[in-house]
Amino acid sequence: MCPGLTNPGPPFRVKKLAADLNLPRERQRLGRRTSVTNTEPVGRYVRGAIPIDKAHSLAFDATVREAAIHQAERKEAEPEGSTLRLKSWDVREKVRERKVSNLIVFVLDTSGSMGVENHMVMTKGAILSLLTDAYQKRDRVALVTFHGSGAELVLDPTNSVQRAERLLRQLPTGGRTPLADGLRIAGELLDKERQRDPGILPLLIVVSDGRANVALHGSDPIEDVRRMASRIRELNVNSMVVDTEAEHFRIGLASRLANWLGGPCYRIEDLDAHSTSRLVRQAIGR
Image (tube, rainbow, N blue to C red; front, side, top):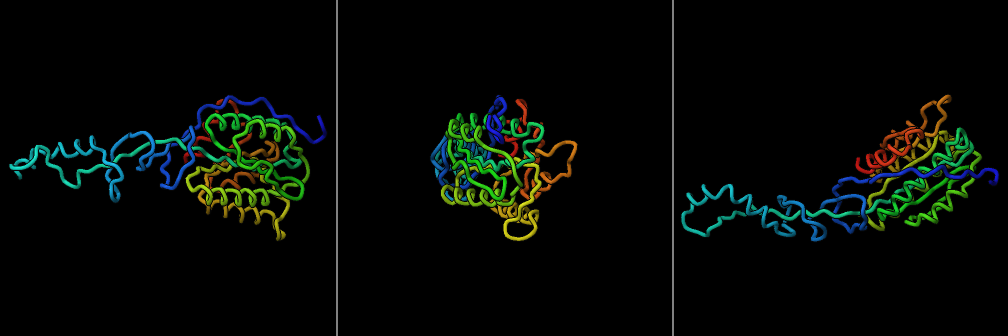
């Protein structure tokens, strides 16, 4: 193995990741993972609901059920009339359920500290597991890495597990930690993808110990991280942080980053075969 390169650990067996979310009515990328409800004429009819405005499609069964409970009093008040006495407020519209895909953007710390205690081996194994699961659910995955003096988008949004796996195996580690630049590139990517497709469900996963020591433009790398995290939070993107800080030298920087992003923080040791899918499911469905 070449110096600075780390082979992935064994992939985990990732179970179904799903979340029930209500999305805007813009176009939505079809997938298999996440269930969303809407009143557009697409998807499986699941229930009737009171229309917010004009009903898009009549839920006849739900409308009749609502009217049925008032028939005795209505017939008494209006002896003459049709068999079924309907009022405008009885009307229910169809609510449908469909599957949409997620866009998972990994921001991966490949600086020198990630070579400690096999963290990069564990991280690559976890990401490979998620990539395989994402392919099965028709999700797309993007990868931003940062080390040395800056960050780079090494994998544009894709559902190609083979391409992502090749990149993971070739990723070198070493150098300083330009975390703010990694967040900057991820934020620009998320904003671009949202503009292209407002219906996507993005999830940002930052894998780092949070020890930023390279500034963007100013002289304070931590303040740059806070500023970039705030910009991502303004995009209303669900986020989670995987803390890779060594247990014997913990100062809680990754947890602080998670607070700035508005998402949960998990230890790298939590990424095992039994908890990975649950943690990501919770992050997607917050």
